[in-house]
Length: 224
Image (cartoon, rainbow, N blue to C red; front, top):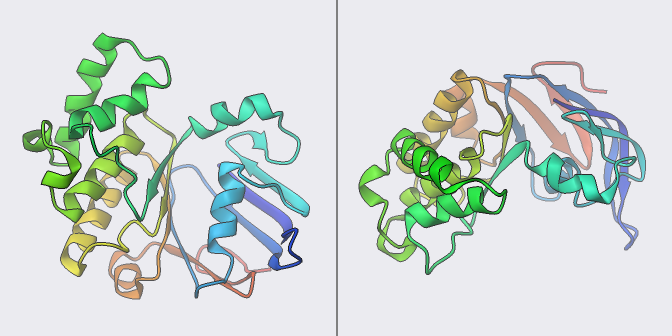
């Protein structure tokens, strides 16, 4: 589903972000991406989402080659993945239901499909009772569950989670990762960026560690 082959990345500023990065994430895996600030984690997410292209090497995601794909294909690539952000990024004047439904509307889903799918997803993340609440009326942990519901609603093949527990307390963070575990058990690939070593230790998934733009360890493969 994701393959980095000899990837180097140097930004226009001259900053080198990634050096000869090689790894593969297979269909159905749950992978933690860890490392200190500035290690290159955010650059990897940007490459996967095709916000940027590598300076050298190849990034393959769901059958798309990051560097060779046409710009008009970028939205189709992104529809194969759900993105969960640290800062939630909910639309403040929309209810929980409408925040999730909006993700379907922008893909052209029918009203009947939305009415069927959104309640199912809200139930999956434990928020059926908050459907008519505004983001300001629910807790940080609940807001992150809305973010997860929005990422899931279009049935993506993978979830990319960028520090999804960074703005919530430890118990809520554990609950959120438990939800990711359940989603992964249902067949969705999960790639989660995190600084939280306790979460990583507790959940016992594959861990790719970055330092200074290099993969220094990979519990599911050889670091090169």
